[in-house]
Image 1 (cartoon, rainbow, N blue to C red):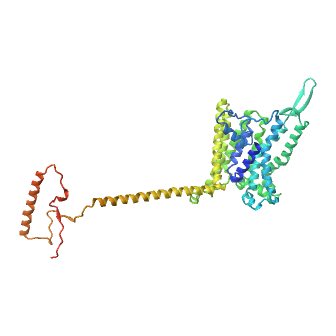
Image 2 (spheres, rainbow, N blue to C red; image 1 turned 90 degrees about the vertical axis):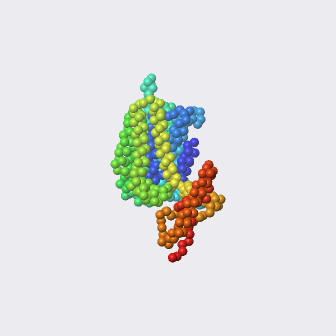
Image 3 (cartoon, one colour; image 1 turned 60 degrees about the vertical axis):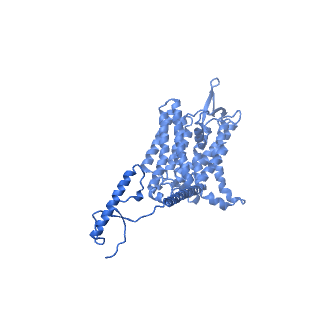
Length: 468
């Protein structure tokens, strides 16, 4: 399970470029390490709980057992537990380390491998070192602890392994194997990594190798030039938290709260992170208008601070020793908030760094263009139908047009002035017509009147004017 999980995480990190050089996953790494260090203090949901999946995801990202204790065979002891816990981080380093030996394999197209994976090899290696550092340190600390057992009757004492009294400290074969592996990890991995990350800038003056400079720049590129040491300080905080075995639970919780508040205060005051990159996931106009470099710096620092606030709030509630049921819900809400924020980070990396981003954006563009074209087509079709219906209605009515002129009764024109005799005749005829129409209307009360046959004194047929 650990081997499959390690390979899966390496594929995800390489595909989505979830490396520390992108300045977006430093907070989630610190959050996972803090929960992994204090996993003995934090309550876990029951195996039958529907929220068990959330705790399992957090545990798998922390390279721990997914929420429950596993026994792979009968009689599995603490020695086997430690050896199985080393599979995940060692697989990390073996997979990435093998990439440096690919050029010697003739059957592999190394040019294609270099074009796809080559630029990310060093950031991925640095990320996996930070990812597995806490697990390695925990295994070494777990393996090298000891205690003394004394026989009261014989007054003899002997040193045994702290977690298994049947194994004598560096005397029994199992603990010799465990101790040798732990010392090798401590001398050849943990101490060099700690020294390199904490004192990397000072060692640059002595080591002039190009690979070393690239390696150090990968760790420090997340921070401003003056604050490259901050990643070493954060690593040192992890080591301090691992000394919880020498403290009580309340003292360990208080130490975690103090470290989280110090990180929040320092990062709010100095904003050590560089700006996030928004080149592929946002349009150019939107990027230039809103996502400026200053705003991107604010987003990068606030992203990390939210994880620190999550840690501070969670362990503050733990300090007050509430009911176990309430503590379990608080831990669950904290993990849900962290996973939600990590999901947003994963979406950002999908559009900004992964090869799937441009394809997804192009698919969105095609979909939007299709619906926009369909909308325009439907509007044109509706307008054509309306115009066709209006033409049909005008042809069905077929109303003849009569040119009429509206004139007031008292209007007189020089060009249409008539003689007194003609006007008297027209007046007599016109009055006779009105009297006949009134009598006809009286005889036809209640009958529908045809408006086209009515005449009024204001409607006069237009005549062609003749020139004087």
